[in-house]
Amino acid sequence: MNFALILFVLLVVSGALWGADHFYARKRRSVGSNDPWWVEYGASFFPVILLVFCLRSFVVEPFKIPSESMVPTLVIGDFILVNKWTYGIRVPVINKKIIDVHTPQRGDVMVFRYPKDTSLDFIKRVVGVPGDKIEYLDKKLTVNGVAVPQSQTGDYLNARQLSYSPSYIEKLGEVEHRILVDNGTPAFISQSEQFPFRDNCTYTSRGVACTVPAGHYFMMGDNRDHSNDSRYWGFVPEENIVGKAFFIWFNFSDLKRIGSFH
Image (cartoon, one colour):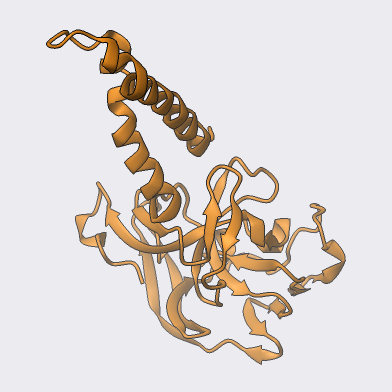
């Protein structure tokens, strides 16, 4: 469901009703008469819909985390806020950038439209920016020939699965964050999917090495062995970017998670 499109249609319809009432019908109604049904149930909602549309399109947008691909940073049930202007001002619905602000940086947690189905929103961490050579071999990440600093920090308890996974602190760019690595799973990455710029990637039994093309980004989940990401379906084009995740505002199962995202 394209909620942005639905909201835009509601905005146009309510705006047309509001305009018809404000500039035409209201002047022809007798003083003290009740508003017609189409004003009460249509035009009166226009200011509210306009406010919601502007906030959601240009300021912040709420999302709910649906999977465990970003554990331990984000868990199922987290409600997060996404900054819509960090990476530039975009035209609502068609998502075309009209004003540049900043570009995604390594370490950012970014929401984007899934390249294989743009009706779906995904959230992953930016690992590679245009021109980077990304290698994920033997479960170790290297960017442009330099190993990304990583130190073990004990096991992480997955409360949903009642299982432990080795946890590490990784420093990607200027961002320190935790990742999970499941040593019981193979490093081999499936080569079954085809995607644009597939020739930029080389797959072996040790993992994958890719050179990020211009205007694209390489994304990975923090739950490294349980994430459907760029290793499988390729690069995220710039036009698919939605915004930068920055805050957990609610979680029904664990109120202590509010504000814990970093």
